[in-house]
Length: 232
Image 1 (cartoon, one colour):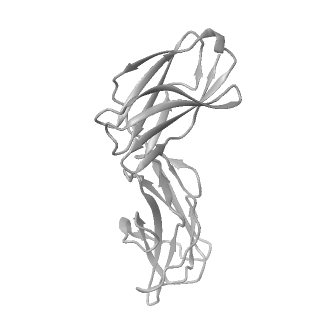
Image 2 (cartoon, helix red, strand yellow):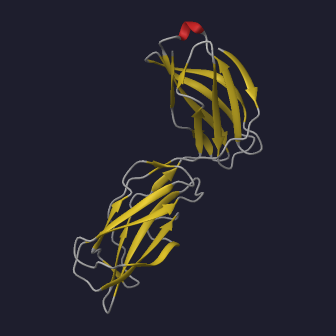
Image 3 (cartoon, helix red, strand yellow):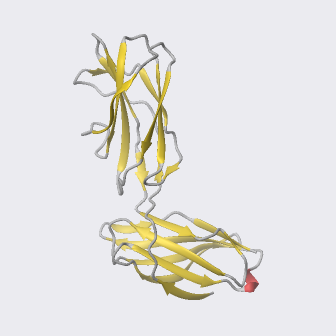
């Protein structure tokens, strides 16, 4: 592959992976949950994308409304507001609620979501996601995942809070075989991004490669997601 580096601004997009379960938070008027946090469960989110928070009433209570929070400091908070006094028009057992939340720029964080059920004349109940969703600090993207041989492939790396970090894009799998071969080495620019172009040899037709970025940041080695590129 013939390589050349180009400077290009690229929108930041940090993926987040979520696994959610039910947790109980004691004290402060909050008791064992009679509200179940149904989603998010797994998946990935870009910063600025819409995350659907869904929960269900699992007990008979005089529910007035719901409060939604997030935390980047563990299951006991402190908690930041997402929405307060979300209306509860249906307080019957099994009622399901949804709230669309725009994912903020919470890089390098394990983010947990909490739903508080505000009850009239009774103790409140809470559900907390555990573990929280993890925001990947280093992302690799490709202009296309299906490249015609003889054409040019572009890949873009972006790292949160790591401008100037030494980085490299590596081929970690080729035609089904595992390997570790540098495609390009260099430094991320002042915005923590870089853009690479590679001309694809015709001999690669019918094969595929898996790319991964590694960067040496302030907190050690950062590893990106994998990108699979197919050559036609």
